Image 1: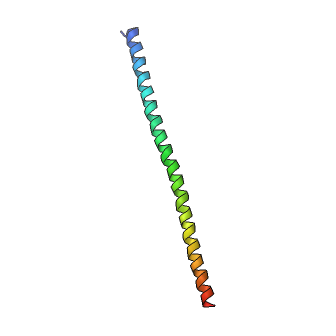
Image 2: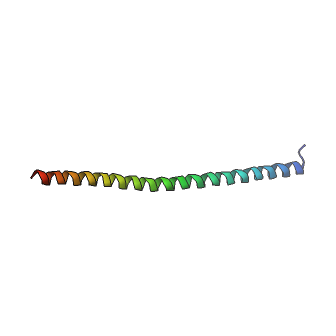
Image 3: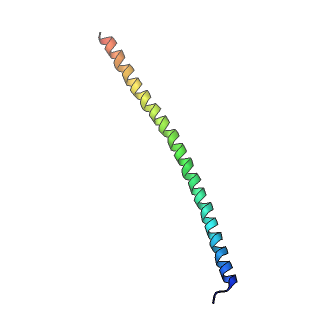
Length: 69
C-alpha cells in the first residue's frame, strides 16, 4: 500500500521538479527575448545600410547624368 508520507513525498518532489523546470524555462525565454531584441536592432541597421547604399548609387548616377549633359 501507499502511505500518506509516500504521497506527500511524491507531490513534493513533483512540485520541486516543476518549479525548477519553470525557472529554467523562464531563463531560456529571457535569453530568446534578448536575442530577438538584438535581431530587430540589427535588422534596422542593415535596412539603413541598404538605404544608404541605394542613395549613394542614385547620387552617383545623378552626377554622371549631369556630367554627360
